[in-house]
Amino acid sequence: MVVQPKVRGFICTTAHAEGCKQNVKNQVNYMKSQLKTNGAKNVLVIGASTGYGLASRIAATYSCGAKTIGVIFDKQASGNRPATAGWYNTAAFEELANQDGFYAKSINGDAFSKEIKEQTIALIKKDLGKVDMVVYSLAAPKRLAEDGTVYSSVLKTTGAPYTNKTIDLKTNQISEITIPQATEEEIEHTIKVMGGEDWKEWIVALKQADAIADNAVTLAYSYIGPKITHPMYLKGSIGMAKDHLYHTAKEITNEFSNSNIKGYISVNKALVTQSSAAIPIVPLYISILYKVMKEKGNHEGCIEQMYRLFHDKLFGDKVVLDAEGRLRPDDLEMQDDVQEAVMKIWNTINNDNVEELADLEGYWEDFYQMFGFHMAEINYEKDIETDIKIPSIEE
Ligand code: NAD
Image 1 (cartoon, protein in one colour):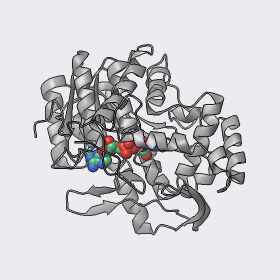
Image 2 (tube, protein in one colour):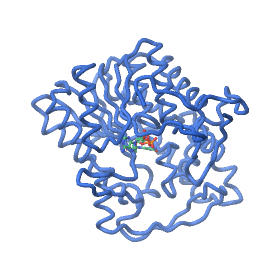
Image 3 (spheres, rainbow, N blue to C red):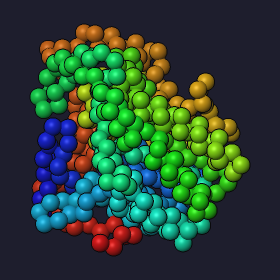
């Protein structure tokens, strides 16, 4: 089948199997070209199929030489519908890892559920014994709780409504958007979905099953960003969930101090992923940030971020933390010179100069590439097989 992109707002409803494979290959090749890391050896990545989770899995495998189990939530191809990008990424990753002699298995299902936790733990016990690192990289719009309640996360402010510039990704037009204030219930639900409760449940379940090693580390990802995004991110409903995640990291470290298990938050750079594309204001900020950082020569994608996180900050001579005890691979994004240049552009950007002042092309390249499109090596006119199997998953 010939597969073309079908973009609907901030999502692409198709994915290209060969393009996704190329994308994973490029990330693997990047990791192979870097110095090795003396880090974890048995790694569980929850939310392993795209974005930061996939890059973490590639870093664990190709930099640390780790065996990995990835929990994903993806759909295989059916009829004329291609699989999701995360499905193709996982199939490609496992194939490459296996070729290179690395253990890699995946479990497809809802990471919030008890059933998937049990399946994952059984696989760890059978194949790895214990894990010494757990990466929690979920970005989910919803959580189905054990009692059947569905919690939805919202992207709203927690104070007054907030107005600023945004970009309409359908037309590339800049306009003003007002982000409404979340209700108490919406904030609570966002914390249920994107806060630390489920992360901790994973660690408790692993510990109870004796499937997590002493001295293990566990990471969850967060974002801080510039002041212009604070009312709707850091101080918004999602920020309240990230705050909960931060306190959960501390709780994990305290509660499991007898086993010396350490929980960390890593604050990562703003990048185009399926999740960040959905956040108002952020895509315009990201396209200006890309412009500035590419000009300065310090732009990074998920894979470069995760390499620096693993190699320089987490598994270096010592764990490099900020004053609040967080890992900060967003250090280059938050440098004064970068932020000053971004804000100068932010204040002057409009529909007449947007093409010149923001890296819209770079934004869209990343967007399409997430779904396996716009990869230089791929011929998109060619008929391709869409029904790709993930080696470790029998459907
Ligand atoms: P992403 O959408 O690329 O990845 C999210 C992953 O979670 C996907 O693999 C998805 O399949 C998986 N997932 C979602 N619901 C699931 C479920 N119920 N069960 C199992 N898997 C599920 O997003 P991302 O940007 O890589 O986000 C990962 C983390 O990084 C999030 O915590 C996010 O807030 C954080 N982060 C992102 C950015 C950014 O700019 N993208 C910056 C800093 C931090």
